[in-house]
Length: 202
Image (tube, rainbow, N blue to C red; front, top):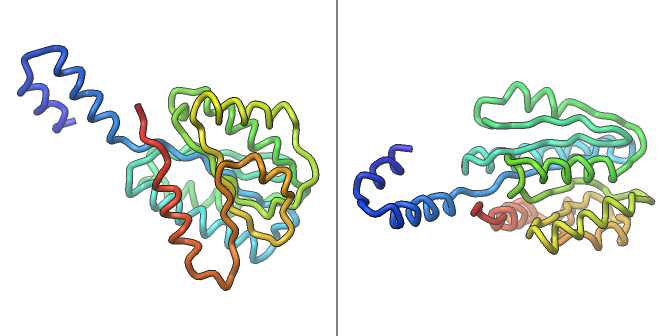
């Protein structure tokens, strides 16, 4: 805010002032929507890895002062809207302790993500789904809406797979597909580098 105020004092033209506001806005990074699978097939190490990766992403978001929206899913969903990640440690810890241990319905978190993309806070967000993607169906209307946002809104949908048997039909709808393998020591760096490319606002 101080930076914007000082810049305004140096400008006498309203047209130039508008241009400066646009440039400042373009430097602000967009928010995240992160969906974490805690279904029964994720029980144990896959779920632990998913939550550690989620925490790592939130640390990166906090460093860049980005807003984040978390969706924990199985056959239902739990959500957490993080306006101020750096001061939400207790809420994040509580959220990451949640587990469903039921079946998997990816339509629910995608529907919620799409709903958030309609809001002012998350209209510029990109979406990451962390899952084993061992699932057999997804609502076709939801997938059509995913395609709509990809083609018309510039929204990117990313997947991080934690299994060797993901459903290729569902993965085909994502713009970027990462796969976690325990022997791959570079997955965190690859994921971080990829997510840093999430588009800027404006």
